[in-house]
Image 1: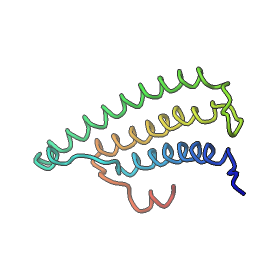
Image 2: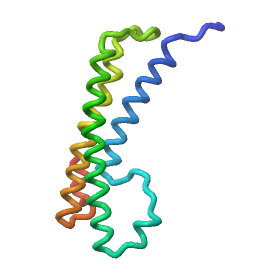
Image 3: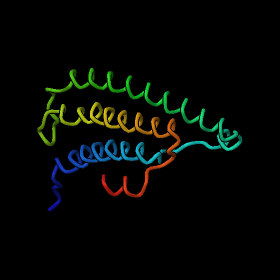
Length: 129
């Protein structure tokens, strides 16, 4: 009875990595990531719009760099085998470029919504997903 299954903790960690990365993409779509509003709240409506556009462009640049770097790291570890679950670590590390791509798509769509004046998704858009 004192023996725990050795692979359960490792598998839980890998599933949590995938869940967190996929949830991050949804949060970009919903514009739900944590932000500091001290400066933003003091800006005029035009200033706020410019602030968000600059922040969105910085996010897109970051996601492009992260996507590139994560592909490089994937190629380094793709054939390494995890000790507990005995699967290729590539299955874990591929979550990063996939998430970067999903977040990039959502960030570009968010930027387009901001530039066109559509501040949030309509209820119908949220249901169709």
